[in-house]
Image (cartoon, rainbow, N blue to C red; front, top):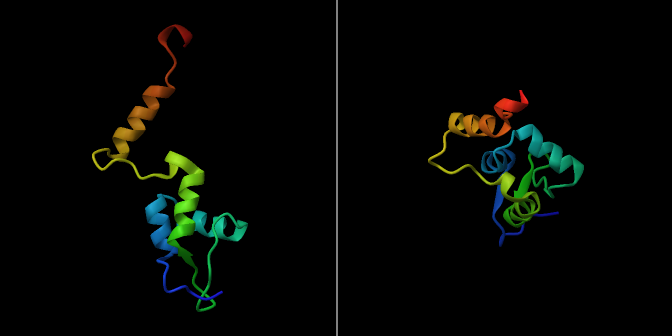
Length: 90
């Protein structure tokens, strides 16, 4: 399959950054057929923007980047607070 000049294509590192997953995870998605990709040079994968957007829709809000004002530490602290048991259940 050749590149379609009408589509935007991203590299695996670009997809990983946008999805906030590791490059290995993105390659696994490609190998499992969950994320269509092509290898125009026979080596490196390229993912069409439309396929990445479709994956984001399927994955839902979990795949969306965290808000800019939220730092990883704040997010982790918030998650830990949600996971804590009430005092009477400890």
